Structure formats: structure tokens, C-alpha cells
Image 1: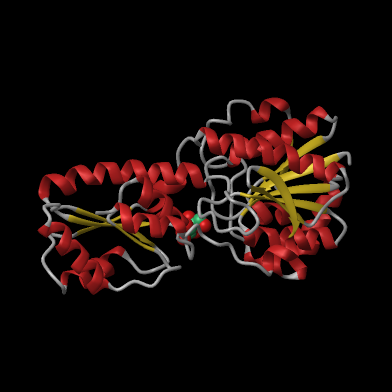
Image 2: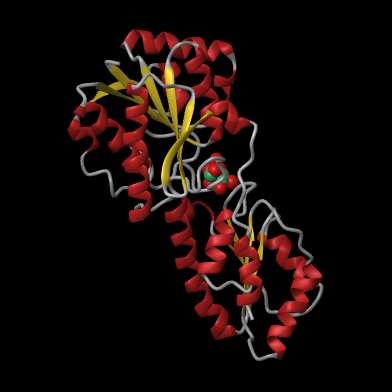
Length: 319
Ligand code: F6P
């Protein structure tokens, strides 16, 4: 392997830059030339590709977002798009690729491998919704951002004796809500993986109030419903002086946490090592603190499982 390409694809996540740096520097340490592909698969097809130097990835380990930009590009699911991408890989002489992104990005990586260009996927998404890895790059930072926000919201909630419904990201997964809910001392955590009943939530809030706790924090995963809708439903069962807050894209930004930087560095270096061994069509994970890899096809046929023990624990802590 003489030349590898790196791209970030799908939603950006803090730690992607640390992963880019790790891939680039590890590859360069083996004398492999490294090419950055801007805007994910869209940039690959358009030939938006440039040679990276050691300095290209200097001073980025601490930066959120991705210096390679990112894009969602569903057109790459079609063979026409893939062939155009391959033309560009040939033109630049790139033999193998590292794709940092979510599972949507892995489909493209598998197609490229099938066409003879080994590609390795790194899980980069704040959602933590990728199978065969305990954590994705960006999740820890996003959880910390949410916890910081909950702490601030708590000040107002306590001062005004209000109930706050805080909507957090995660698409269809409850991981951010579960982790940030426990770490932020939420009274209720509502996630798509568990049934809920708004009337029961209202009763729980009333019980808390009867016992003297007059403010409440409900952490709601976006995959369940919007915060406004939840708040309005809640209001049908009592006056909790409720407010809703949607944290939104603030969760995607910011300097990556140390954990995300380390995870990205380990995974990035490992991706290069695996490509060097001639492997492709695989995705890297961190399972029980060990670096692992699995065939992408296995990932497509399995589903990520959120740690629902957090949900159960929180039921007993939020009293
Ligand atoms: O996948 C990451 C994520 O931030 C999800 O949590 C969220 O549902 C989605 O992306 C938002 O996507 P966009 O930035 O394209 O609106």
C-alpha cells in the first residue's frame, strides 16, 4: 500500500480531527502517502482530493468538527456514483481508504472494497448508535456538552421551581439521553428503547413535588418526540410551570474530550495497521476496552444496543 485516502462522512463529531491526524501520521510513519478527500463521498466523486503533509494535521487534535468537511451523499449508493469515485481513486493512485463516519458511510466503504479498494470504517458520530463498538468517536464530548447544559438549566429550574424538558440528539438511539441523564441527575429519562407514559411521568413529578422537590429535569431523546410536544402533553396532567429546551447542534461541536481524542488516536492508528495487512470492508470498534474489527456486513445485520441498565439505575436514583 503506497497511498491512502481519508474522508469524513455524515454528521460531524468531535474527535474526527484527532482521528484524521492519527490516520495520517501513522500512515506517514510507514512511508505511505496520505490524501485528504474533502466533503466525504461527494468530494470523492468530484475529485476534491489533496495530498496531506505532517503539518496538514498539526494543531487539529483539539479542534471540533472536521478539517476535511463532511457531507451526506446518498447518491453514492448508486453504482454510477461509485464508479465515478473509483475513477478519482485511480487518477490519484490511491489504493486504500479510511472512512470516518456513521453506518451510512460504511455502506459506501463496503462498495469500494468490493471494487478492489480496501476501505476501513471508523465510527465517528455523537449518537453512539453503531454496533460492535462500546463507544463512537464524539459521543463522550457530546454527553459532556449535554451535562454542562443540564447543569445550567438546573439553576433556572431550581430558582423558578420549574419542570424542564431537555431534548437531546441521538436520532433513533437513546445513548446520549441515558448517559447525560444519569450524569446530569435527571429525574426522568425518556428514550425510544423504553416505553413511557406521560401521565405516569406527571404523577412522578407530582410525587417529587409533594416530597419537597419542586423542580424537575426530564431528558428526552429526540427519537421519541419533540420537547414541545412532550411538554404540552405533560401540561394536560398538571401545572408544572414547564419549559422545553432543544439543545440541537451545540451537541455536535466543541473541543473533543480527552477520551474522544484517545479513542480516535487508537482507532485511527489501528485502521492504518489493518489496511497495511491487506484488510478491507471492516469497521473498527472498541469493545471491553480492546480494539476490535468486524466485517461491515455483520454490522449491517445487527443493531446497536444502548446501555439500558442506566435507565433502570436512574429510576432508583431520581428520588
Ligand atoms: O447523526 C448525528 C446527528 O447529530 C443526529 O443526532 C441528528 O439526528 C442528526 O445528526 C442531525 O442531522 P443534520 O445535522 O443533518 O440536521
